[in-house]
Amino acid sequence: MLRATALLLVFAAAAQPALLSAQSPTTTPDAPTYTADHKLMLPAHYREWIFLTSGIDMSYTPNPAMAGHSMFDNVFVNPSSYQAFLKTGTWPDKTTFILEVRGAEGPSSINKRGHTQSQELMGFEIHVKDSSLEGGWGFFEPDGPATAALIKRPAACYQCHEAHGAVDTTFVQFYPTLFPLAKQKNTLSPAYLKEISTPAAAK
Image (cartoon, rainbow, N blue to C red):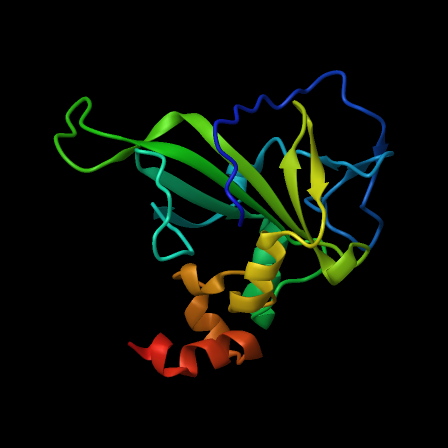
């Protein structure tokens, strides 16, 4: 997922815009919802969702331009989609991922080495599987206290996920509890299998 930096979010409970709900009797309570102008409502309680993984200083380029300090990436997914993945090895429509970015802090309290995560939120992004979107998936970045706007194609985040995602354009290869399941159920994408079979990837 594309990183957004230096972004502070407050999830507003009041003064929310009129909603155009993505839910129906056949969808789940944690499905994404949109405003009348097609902006995604920020899920206020995503930290109660399923935690998939945390990475530190991850980069998809060999020589990234670092910000001068370490960063943690935390990934969450809505519970109903997680349960579906456990059964099928792939993601159902209306799957919603949250990527939050926090700074890595040094020694504090009784911690004398290593890193802990900052209380301050440094970045935030949402990745949604929605059949109504072009390509079936959309990346959203917050554009206000309660909504997020769609990142339009062609953006690098789409191209990267479609070329390298292990399952359904998502980076399941970085989710230690789900990657073995995807291999067991044979749901790894052709693009990912081709990538890891090349000599360069085998090194």
